[in-house]
Image 1 (cartoon, helix red, strand yellow):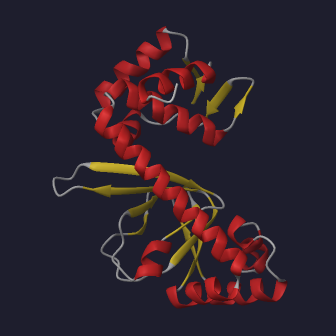
Image 2 (image 1 turned 120 degrees about the vertical axis):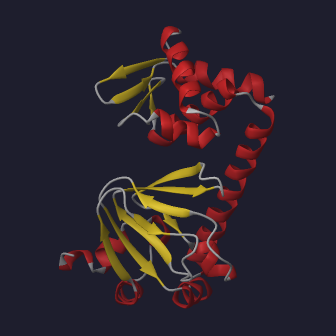
Image 3 (image 1 turned 135 degrees about the horizontal axis):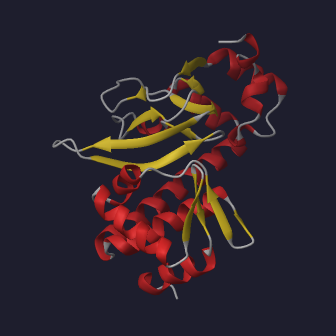
Length: 235
């Protein structure tokens, strides 16, 4: 780990800590543990008894879980600025998911006692944490509705729309770079890779999706949004 990464400057870039005093950031930097992991390595597991909160400083991670039969269910991908592990730190219960790196990543972690003290002493951080947890509840509620009421085709449309909005839409076009793997999409919408491949082929024929090198380009996000709204009852 390079010394500059062990500083308040790295933490200052996190949305959760925006506006904190320099002295508080320096204190947090000293309290944190610092991790640098290569791609495709586990960062935390559900069986992990520790209750640290993790802050992603660089790289990309996947929050996922496995059934007793070995089926993978992916919840979301995390990018720079995200944080996770906070639920276990708050309620002391076991982890609800595993986290693995998708690429080389740098992460800082803060113990549960220190994290709870931070929430008590910094009202703005506590408010951001509440909004963060509320957002997770809304996302999971929407996923449950989709899994319960939509077919594979519509679930894939909804997932691609989420990814497009997360990456950013410019002139009705979104670029997912790198393109999500078919297996990863299948894990996120609870289906088989072959079904994802068939549906993406249909979207390509319809002119909604195209490949551009290693990227996937969504050519008409507004149309995709209308398709999702029509089947979800939001139209």
